[in-house]
Image (tube, rainbow, N blue to C red; front, side, top):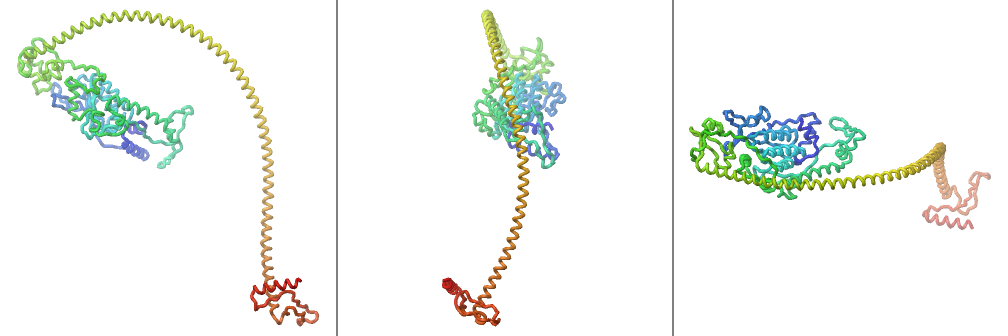
Length: 608
C-alpha cells in the first residue's frame, strides 16, 4: 500500500509517460471499485559478490572455517554483511518504477540507500554496482540515491551503474550520480531527461458517477496557499504555479546531468530516449557484461585500473584497506613463481591467509595489496616448509623501501621548510591582525557617530510624520462627517422614492384593471361586429335575390312593361299599385358587357 499511496499522492515525476498513462487509470479504477492490485512477482535481491581470482566471480562467501554463506536473498536478516570475511562488491537491483517506499516489483530508494550505507560500513566492501532497468519514477528518490552514493564515496568506494534494458528519467538521474555507466547491450535505452506532473483532480462539488458520492473541500480562511497549484488546475485549469515548480526542478535536473556528462548537448537533455549505441561516450561509458563491471570495481579498489577521465576528479575519500595479518621473525613461508627462501612464517600461520580450504596459496592482491603493488606477485604458494622470497624479490622490496625512505626524508625536509614559511606567515598574520583591529576600531567610532546622526534625523522625521498624520486624521474625520450627512440625505431621498414607487405601483394596478375592462369591452364589440357582419351578409344576399327577381320581372312580357310604355293595370283594379319602369331593362339577347354599356347610356340620358 505504501507504493500505491506514493503513486497517487506524488505529483512530480521523472518517468516515462507510458508507465503513468497505464498505471494511474488502473489504480483509480481499482480504488473506485474497491479492488486490490496484486502482482505475483519476486523482487530481485541485492547480492554480495566475491572474487577468488581475476577471472572467477562468485555470488557467495566461503569463510575461512569452511562455512558457505548464500547470496543476499535475505539481506538485512541474519546480519549477512557482518559475516563477510573477504573482499566483495555490493550489487543492488533498481528494477521497475522508482518510488521511495518500493512496491510489488521493486525496492524503494530508501531501501537502496540503507543497503548501500550498511555495505559501505563493512571494511571488506570494495565498491558498489547498481543493476538498473527502470522507466524512472519519483523525483524525490534522487535525494536518497545521492545520500547513499555520497556515503560510499566517504568510505573511499566507487559506485558503477550497469544498465540492462532501460534507464530513463529518474533512472538516468541515478546513473549520473554514479562514477561510471556501462550498458549490457547497444540496444539498451537511455535518456528521457525531464520532469512531468501527473495526477487526478476533483473540484469542490464534483460527483462520483460510480458511487454517487459528492466530493467536498473546505479550508481555513487563512490557508489561501494550501493546495493552491491543484485548486487552480481543478477550478480554473490554471497550471501556472505547477509549471513553475516543474521548471525549477527540470533546470536542476539538466544542470546535474550536464555536470556529470560534459559531452552531452542540449538535444540529449530535452526528454528524448536514445539507443545506447547513439550516446556512447555521451550518456554511457562503454559496453560490458555484469562480470566485467564487477571485476572493474575490484581493480579500481586495488589500484590496478584507473577511473575514467569523466569522473576521475570526483571527491572520493582514500580507501582504508582491511588490516592484514602480520609476520614475525622465525616464521616460515614459500612464494610461487620460482622463489627461494628468505623471509619465513610457519605453515599454520600461512594457512590462516588462504582464501579457500581446498587451495594452498595466498592471494597477495587481496590480502596484501601494498606488497602486491611493490612486487607484482599475485599468489604465494604454501609448501610444507612455508613460503619464502627470492633474491630478485628482496632487491625489489629493498629498492621500494629505499624509495619510501627517500620520500620520507624529502617529506621531512619539505615539512621543515613549510614550518619556517608557516612561522613567517604567522608573523605577517599577527601584523595584519593588528592593522585589522585598528581599522575595526576606527570603523566602530565612525559607525557610532553615523548612528547618532541617523537617530537624530530619524527622530525629527518621526515628529514631522506624526504632525502630518494628525492633520491627515483631522481631514479624514471631516470627510467622514460629510459622507455620513450625505448618507443620511440619500437615505431620506431613498425613503421618498420608495413611497413614490408604492404610489406608482397602486396606480399601475388600477390602470391594469381598467385595461382588463377595456379589453372585455373590445371583445364584446368585436362579437357584436361579427354578428352585424353576418346580418349584413344576409341582407346583401336578400338584395341580390331581389335584384334577380326584378330582372326576371323586367324581362317577362306577361309581368313587366316595356321600356317607355305607359303604366298599365295589372288586374288589381283601380286601387292596385302601378309598376313604373324607371331603369334600364336588360336585354337577354345581349351580353352582360353590352347590357352594362347600354345601362350606362340610358342612365345618362334619363338624368338629362
